Amino acid sequence: MSNETSAAENIPEATGSGVTAEQVAAFLGANPDFFLDHQELLADLTLPHQSGEAVSLLERQVSVLRERSLHVNTKLGNLLENASKNDQLFEVTRTLVLTLLGAETVEQLAVAVCGTLLRQESVDACKLLLNDSRHSDSTDNLTVDANLDTIFAEVFRLQHTHCGQPEQEQMEILFGAKASDIKSTALCPILANGTPLGILAIGSEQSNYFNVNLDTLFLDFIGHVIAAALEGKLSR
Image (cartoon, rainbow, N blue to C red; front, side, top):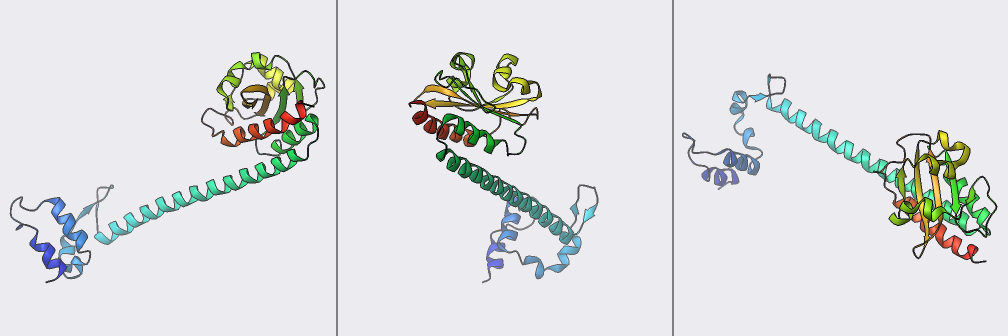
């Protein structure tokens, strides 16, 4: 006995409401070649389209397959895009870590960090801020302010990168003369066993480039690396 016959036997006689839609669907699912032996039925099938017109079974199948193909291509495109972004982040991280290993002073470390980040798309400002008064010389990439843990208490409390738009007073401390050009920021706390060492401030002239929905895993990792590199240099 064929599978088709066996499946057909499980369907009640097509009288009244004896056959349910689920049973028909199950039968056709188990016998995808059913219409090959009953091609006369295809002429009687009508499949309404969104346009309101009836289309053939073949046209509907082509339409469904096209939609599925588009969905698969979109998912594949997203996966490839994410893979490309991950490759870029890995390369930036690798370059930065290797550069930090070669930095002998705090000033060199600040140059290494900001030099790498400023080469990234839409990053228009970068500053490493420390609250250690033993390093009193400020440069283009380095600022020392003993009140950082008070002024940016919320950033240190969160213990992870904070994205958005700080208050104007904070912006001026972070970026000085460039403050008016910066529309969004990422503030990464530099912590050693919970103790604030400083902040890595990154700014963009795009108002929504750094936003609350941004994945900060990469920046948080950079903050940990900088903290490890700073501990030895600040203790000298």
